[in-house]
Amino acid sequence: MVDCADPPVLLRDVLADVDDAVRLLEAQAPYTPLGGWYNPGADPHARTRPMWFQNDWVHDDFAADGSDLFLRHEAYIEAAKVFYDAEVIEPKSVYVNLMAAIAEGGPAHTDNPRFHGRDRTNTPMWLLRSMLWSGLFERHEITQATAIWWLSDVEGGGLRYWADGPDRAPREHVGAMANTALIGDNHRMFHQVAPMAAAGEATRLVSPSAELAPVGDATGDWAVTDHGEMVHRAPLDAYRVSVLWKADVYPTEADRVARQADNLTMIAVAATFDADLVERGLGLRLDLERLDDPELKAAFWATYAEPKPVGALRSVFEALA
Image (cartoon, rainbow, N blue to C red; front, side, top):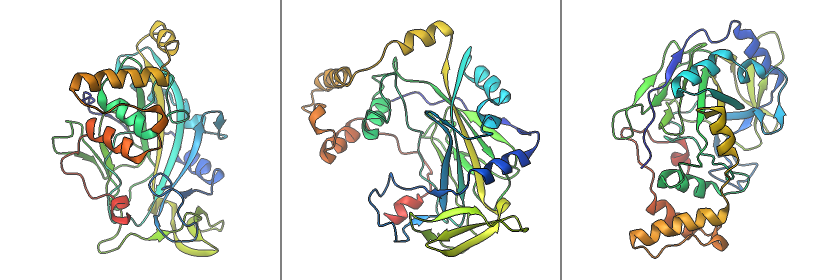
């Protein structure tokens, strides 16, 4: 099992002017529902997804105008250097979540890993996660710092996080969240979004085709529109808005150069797993011709199982499955 991370660090008064973030949110609208990873091929007309909207502001070769507000945030970079005792911090991505009327929690999870030579562009996510939890590929794993920033305080919607390991009770950042950020290692620390719905309110569902955007009038409201119908409308500060920043971390420049030159091939991944499976006395092998086989995925997830964090709330995606 991989080691758990140190507790995250809380930063306050992250942005000098929160309206800068609001303008960026408005400029990058509309936002579309999260969920393709748990029900791919879903009917685009059926209302099967929670009102959990997402959009990338920085990813690969795309950077939204104004996204340097978060991508190059000096406090994030300096905090990551201290947290990891590292000299090199390479900001990589920024994305935003906007949520409303979700009565269950988000999934209790660690963020998806990346390895030098292996990421979601060339390797199935189930295999990447097996690589992480096997502990066999730490030399190639890319350490990634994460900062989560919140726009405002909402009812519920705190962040539960297992800073003491998955076998201990979670802590929670909730209340007084506006313009704060937690920075740490979300790839080794389980975390979960708490419910955000009024008492007795059920999760409201939309179709994969729904969009969230400003109404465009003097009220400042934002609305969810689904196939031409406005199904939800509220001020922006009534939505749970969080912006996530990620950066690659290296102890030194020499370490960065060496690691980036040592890329994993799929053949090497299979050889490493197979050697471990032989040592365990198991007949399972990583057959590279069967990476789309659900039975192979299930066998690896059973062998290199992720912990189940104590006290995790039921996920909205489990409720909808």
